[in-house]
Length: 489
Image (tube, rainbow, N blue to C red; front, side, top):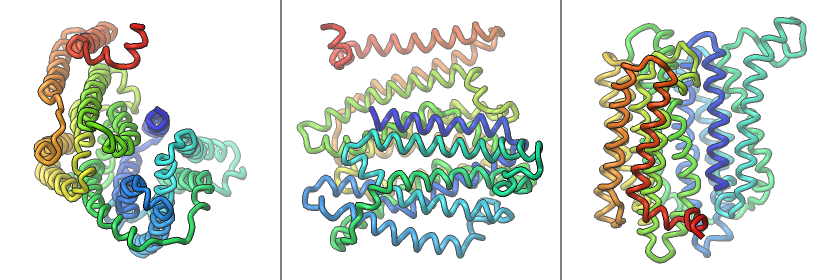
């Protein structure tokens, strides 16, 4: 609960920057630039951390590695981060050309700093999770995000207003009004990353200069396929912003503005995205520990069932209440709302895929995950390349939907052959088809209802009808949960 709630809280607080920036920034193209640089950063983070977080969990569960794994993993990331940072610094033009930010070198330099500092915090955070210290983990995550928001507001709102009142104000020493606002958004992120490292100082100081070469080699063999899978995953998750800018016809400003619209509307899949991220935080170490118990397959199947039910309800909560959720982004970005239900369903597929991936992680067959993700990446690239010139960001949304759907199906079929888990897949498929039907019926019905409150009433009715249906179908299963047992007692 601590990992899940803290991750949800941190991500949700961070997402509050979306309404702030979409309402505050004058140009849609500036929000597009933010989307472009934050499409490149996660991709480079995969390279900088090269799957060592998952490898740490995998090998730290073995008692013979207790003494050396933390220092070995930390030292490896320290030296590789220094090397990769130097390489990026010497090749800044590459990032500039890829993101269209070649004329904004300071943004690129700050971004390199963010990537480097985030990489150094990876293993200390993993250690907190592994050792069961969720309160400190939660505090650092939430505190870092609050620092980011504070400094973003300071640079974007406070400093310009202060300089407008008094041109000789002290803020002139830290703020240049001629800088693009994106510079200060990334600077606030860099301050957050540095603050996070400072809070992890105790864990960092516990690193000893003990490097186990044999263990490191085993970890690299395990983790390198995860790099391929991670790269493919980031291509599927964020790279479409870059592809949209590359392949969309028009001026640079028009491309950036369309990326801004797509990036803002993408954030409206917030509930499902937050839940999936929180689930991954808690599920990965949980799944590995369950593997040592009796009949773990039953546990995995049960977790999958309640996971799918939860994200189906979330789909309805977002898609049926879009007239409310659209207020989350500025009015000039709402032209892209049509893509939100598509992206929501795509994220359902992604969440199911993360659940399914346990079969190859437990079996040390991480190359399987790499192959599946590469297939997804190829699908993403082909669809975007073919259809972005004609369909703009709508092509990106359908590419994401098709990619994650394909990955989910491939992983399920392959995984059942390698490590059979008794998923109630027919029932879960019915739930997903049902929410899709409810969405289409709702979309048709509200065309004849002009009153907003009546529309919301219909949305509530549809959502409650689905929850009631699931409750009836899963009545026996729900009665086995501790919450219902305690109420019955």
